[in-house]
Length: 121
Image (cartoon, rainbow, N blue to C red):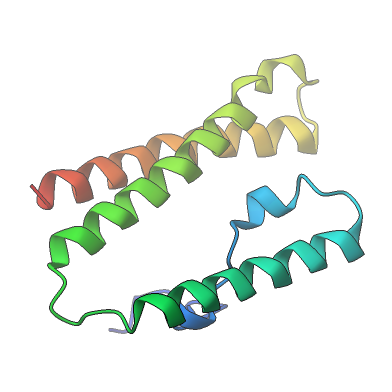
């Protein structure tokens, strides 16, 4: 499709994905520790997949769509929190512009998540 935007970072396969959300890892200010926690998350994910066996291709698509909606709701919540205090920052600053953008994106992502959830009923 010609007008479709290209992903800059194509998604990894499920078994290669991070064990923790990037937003969680940001709570760890020390980069070497953050990297260690990230590695631990990947190891935990590998152990869980090994213990439970491969993902089942016959899992209902509704389960995947609902899971994606829940992940989007998490992103929506984070962006809404960051956008909440936009007016506390001086007009014309990059901080305020980005917080206002986060607020707008939170609303859009919320609508997208609601649409996915409704479709998976």
